[in-house]
Image 1 (cartoon, rainbow, N blue to C red):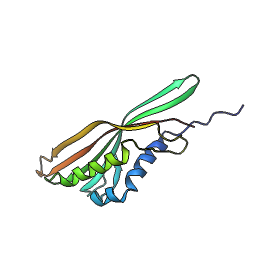
Image 2 (cartoon, one colour):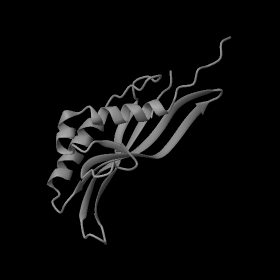
Image 3 (tube, one colour):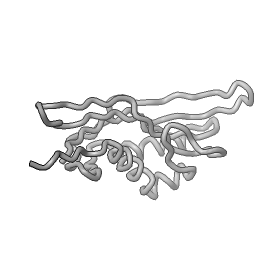
Image 4 (cartoon, helix red, strand yellow):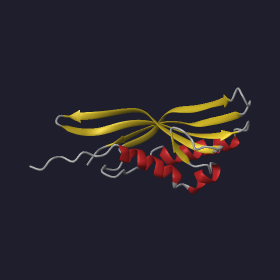
Length: 144
């Protein structure tokens, strides 16, 4: 009997990042790019992705699925909310009910927004405003 090859959960992260960065409409709104956790220096219009939660499920001895919750949000510098609103709408279109197929996994079983995100951040030193909008997206995938 050959050993079981475990799927690499990082491939799910890659699939999420690629889905965002490959979308011309979204990149037209937030041309600064897509970043994991922290934006690049000097970026003023961008998307941030962070893992909020991960829950594997097992039916011994095999793993049945992974449920991963991501924070996916657009961030735009300034006082107007129009660009960040458009970016959040596009993020939602890309992920609500989406079928995502990371390497080593079957197509996603579920992808949905679990919570909306919207807030304004104020830099106390410069008084610059940053608009944040997006959501917590829950993705369920099953390793092959």
